[in-house]
Amino acid sequence: SLRIRMPAPVHPILVTRGLPVRFGGHVAVNSVSCKFHPGTLTAIVGPNGAGKTTYFNRLSGQLRCSAGQVLLYGSDITGDSAPVRTRKGMGRAFQLTNLFPFLTVLENVRLAVQASARPGRTLVSMLTAHTELIEKAEHFLSRVGLSERRAALASALSHGDQRKLEVGMLLALEPDIFMFDEPTAGMSVDEVPVILDLIQEIKNQKDKTIL
Image (cartoon, rainbow, N blue to C red; front, top):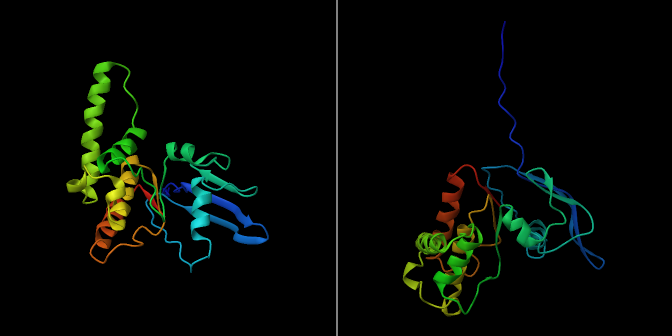
């Protein structure tokens, strides 16, 4: 007898259901329902004031709403805070830089690496882990072209380099979902390809979701 084996359905990794955001009488986001699948890149396009960043804030937990749902891996995370969502695999780069200004470039990325790593339980394992954290931080700095600025304070960087540093920190978190809010805003023409190439590299991994 003839048998046809159908491929298993690919379930969405992130879902919003009827997501609204209101500021007083102004509706910034009007009951948005979307599904985002693993291995896809989705561009959210609209003019200034359309609600793109507000929608991102709702997805990442920076902004809470009284209605609608956000589902991650099929589980309701509507009530979860931004740090909890980050630990569950959501990574966010902001439209405005979100750095530790009085720490060095390397220290900023090391903290991001550390946030995604499990702490060691013994002195030896802690020392080993520290070395590994530095090595991983150096790796991510290299990917965003900031190795030569590792010792500089984040506050001393140009705006374009600060954006690259923030993307480096996002990479260091190693999330399943990458959320870029206008990642090339304020960058020079020469700096933009670094970020676009990184996004293409993430997309090529096939298992990451990019917004």
